[in-house]
Image (cartoon, rainbow, N blue to C red; front, top):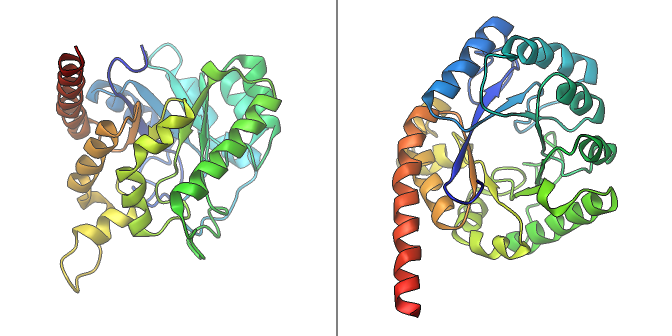
Length: 283
C-alpha cells in the first residue's frame, strides 16, 4: 500500500536523445529486456517514456511517440508483473498506452499541454502524476527562474489540482511531483528537497525524480571542474533520494534501480525509526 514504504519507479527511456542514457534503449527488443531487468533489480513500477523532456528537447508528434512505446508495451504483456506508467503529455498517447496495458499516466505538463488527458484518465480510472514545470522542455532552463521557488511550485500544483478536479478526477487518482530540474536553478532544486514537507501540506502523495540530473553533476564536480556525466551521478542521486524520503516522498523515480533500492531500504528504516521515536515522545 502506498505510504507503507517508499516505492521505486524505474525509468525506461525509449528515445534516441535522452540526457541520461543517450538512446541506449531506443530499440524495442533492447527496451523490453531493460524493462525486465528493471523489475528484477527491485522496481515497484516502470515508467516508459517515448518523448525526451530534457532541457531544449523539441516536441514530437503523437504517432511518433506511439511508434516508440507501443511495441514495448505489447512485448511486455504477460511478462512484466509490476504496473507500468507512461510518461506523456498527449491524450492520444495516454489513451493508446492504457489500452496496451499501462496503468498510470505521468504528465510533466500537469495537464497544461493537453487538458483532455485528464478525461482519458477519468474514463480509465487511472492514477495521474502531475508534475510542476516552469515553461516547456524547450524553454524551461532559459529563465528567468522564479523568485520564490516554493511559492511558484505550490501555485503551479494548485492549478494542476484544479484542472484535474474539474475533469472529474478523484483525490485517490492524483499524485504530485515538484519537478526537480524542470525550470529550476541548481540551488532551487536543493531548496525544494530541503522544503519538501511544505509541499506535503497539499495532501497528495509525492513523487520525486532527481536521478542523474544536471544539478547533481555540477554539485559533485570539484572547483573549476566540468560537471560529472550522468552515469557518474549515482551517489548524488542516492543522497537526494534519502533526503526526499526523509522529507515525505512516497515514490522516487530513478534510473539506477539496483543501487537505489538499497538506499531506499536504509532511508525507509531511518524514517520509520523517526516516526516511532515521535510516537513514544508524544505518549
